[in-house]
Image 1 (cartoon, rainbow, N blue to C red):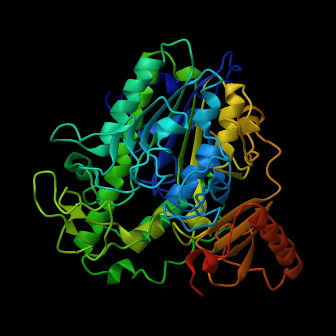
Image 2 (cartoon, one colour):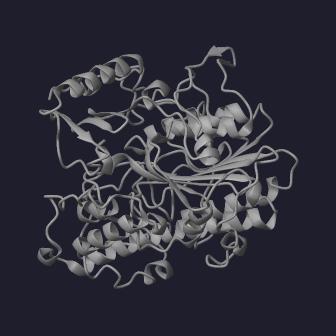
Image 3 (spheres, rainbow, N blue to C red):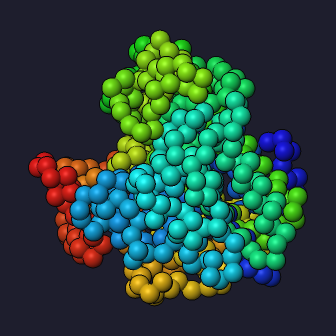
Amino acid sequence: MHRRSFLGSLAGAAGALAAPAAKRPNIIVIMADDMGFSDIGCYGGEIRTPNLDRLARRGVRFTQFYNTARCCPTRASLLTGLYPHQAGVGHMMEDRKLPGYRGDLNRQCVTIAEVLKPAGYRTLMCGKWHVTPVNPSKHNWPLQRGFEHHYGTIHGAGCFYNPVTLTRDNEYVEPEGKDFYYTTALSRQAARFVEEYAPKPEPFFLYLSYTAPHWPLHALEGDIARYRGRYKPGWDALRQERHKRMIGMGLVEGRWPLTPRDPAAPAWNDAPDKAWEQRRMEVYAAMVDSMDQGIGQVLGALEKTKALDDTLILFLADNGGCAEELNPNWKGLHIPRTTRDGRPVRLGNIPSIMPGPEDTYQSYGIPWANASNTPFSLYKHWVHEGGIATPLIAHWPRGIQGQPGRLAHDPGHVIDIMATCVDAAGTKYPAEFAGRKITPLEGKSLLPVLHKGRREGHSEIYFEHEGNRAVRQGKWKLVSRHPGAWELYDLEADRTEMNNLASSQPAKARELLAKYEAWAERSNVAPWELVTGKKG
């Protein structure tokens, strides 16, 4: 279905009050990979995302929703409703021999699929799994954790033209056709799942987990062409442009200043290799654009099967924009040596090589990631706002009440996705599963926000990744960039974290630190030096 033809019925619903849901909805959770807070159109970006924008116009946009700052911990939290360390995925897929850092989804948790399947849902997945090591054992593959069908990758990042660990159900498969592109393949399969399962009497749960726009910068030339010349003004102008739009949309407040350009990024006027720098952002934008086109295909399938109104759709990202600069010495399972037709892959951010084609392997780097995370500072890995703030769009025509297109300012966390799915499905989170005790659910349902505009939220929300730590309590946030000191911010007055109040509000800092330490103790969080075996 053409990306701009989707769902004319959405536009006519503006201003109408939704009727309460008459039956259990289908549920679709869509996750983008390494996408910044301000990239998509309905969050202030210039990237063309008409399908997500239309969902936002009829749904609810959350302005203070959080992930865990990294791909696999966020996926572990989303799937289980727990903090990642409680699920065994406090870092990456290496086994650090500590309960919170086994790099493998444990059996003291349940996935959304494991909860919804016994409740009568059909359980389907397309895309990136990334909560178990890539090894001969399939004990934690999607079908072993409650899903009936899966098409996608077990591993994390990888080539979009020839992704490693591509699987269908429980078997590795090869990419189909010479024009294979991973984002397109996932979208097509997701649309096929909808067309097959929407007409059935049982509701379905679909987890659509893209790798776009995670590096490598791979995109189809037709998509890249739409952005040719768009980034000629550079990253400084782009940050200002996005910030202004975000204020106008009500996503951020004008009293929160735009953070300074990252010190590691030159002013655009001083940047060398401008043609290459522009191309990097053009390819990144094309990757987001392609994902939105695919989401349009899924929504078109919902409309074709008359299931759109009875489907709860949640869209979010797994962490903030990624500032990693790839170099030719990088190694990993995800980096192929050659293309499918035998050409050598040219690895690294080399300005003489324009990214996009299959024989390149690059990232968009610090300056553009800084723009993706407008107006915040820092990136993926860190738990300042640039690393953990995500868009969250909720769309459910028969289930959302109140003014379509409204903003929800209640703070929330990815642990809330499981609770929301359980609530919408009318089932219960189990105390035991398959004879094992299950860690109690940490998340809280978002449905009260969708129904009434507000909910009784979390007293505190916690974060830890690679020693970077934070706790949010109401307007207060205590945060540390490892191995630095604790900082304290009043996010009502200063969400861009420019005015550190730790020295002027020591009692509040001590209170939040005590709460963080108690949470870390009960949640399997270990000091980063103990996890790595290194000091400092």
